[in-house]
Picture (cartoon, helix red, strand yellow):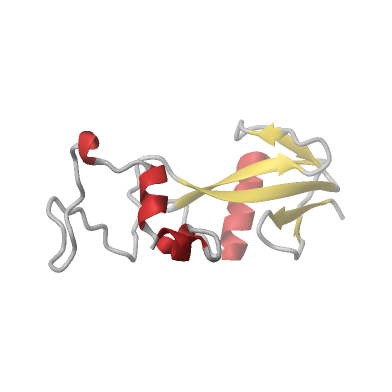
Length: 131
């Protein structure tokens, strides 16, 4: 029986689509895969690539020969907003209890001066000599 083996790029398991004829169109293959995986065409599209040659099938009428192996990736449909579970918070002012960042670059302290001020960065016994 003619078939096409497909594997999602994020999975280890391979599945098979069985069809009649010598070829299956890319559009038919996508519909079969989406039906089996319970994917909605409104939410995502599938990017199908030949597993052996790396050629990406882009035309919906492209014919994929029987007994081929393809790699499938889910991609978002253009124009669909992503639904993020984590809220995006933009703040113009720092949260309470935090210090404000210094915006004046002239007030920055050079690294060498910071190292001299902080004894944790000095070599063992060196801060005892300077005291």
